[in-house]
Length: 137
Image 1: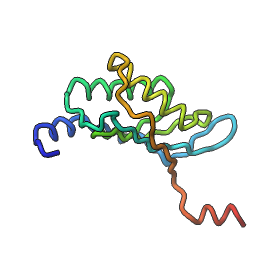
Image 2 (image 1 turned 120 degrees about the vertical axis):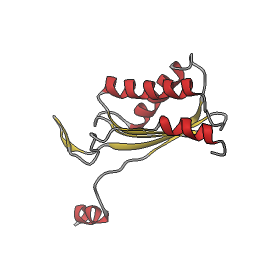
Image 3 (image 1 turned 90 degrees about the horizontal axis):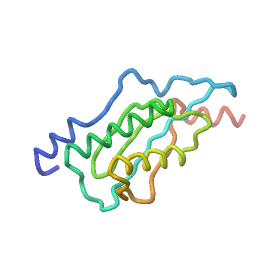
Image 4 (image 1 turned 90 degrees about the vertical axis):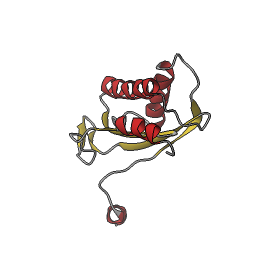
């Protein structure tokens, strides 16, 4: 950011839990799985939020939501958009995870519509292209 004070606020609120290993195999009654999601949501206005109390409320909301659902939260990166890396349960669709996070973030700000009605959610894990070829042969 151009303003060093705003940059300092953002740097203090970047979240990382080094005890979380998203490459670890998780197990359920259905078997072993990887279900790790990089999620990106963007503010509705496209503006950079720099108020410490708002950013701290976002962070608390995401952490609490992940604990409530037993999701493994690795990182939160707060900018004009929010980057979240987590592992959800095998029964949790990416859409249900993102909508839960977005609803809780809105709740943290008195139900204001803060986020665009779109998002990016992908998947990642410890696989390479060889895993695809091995599954096809």
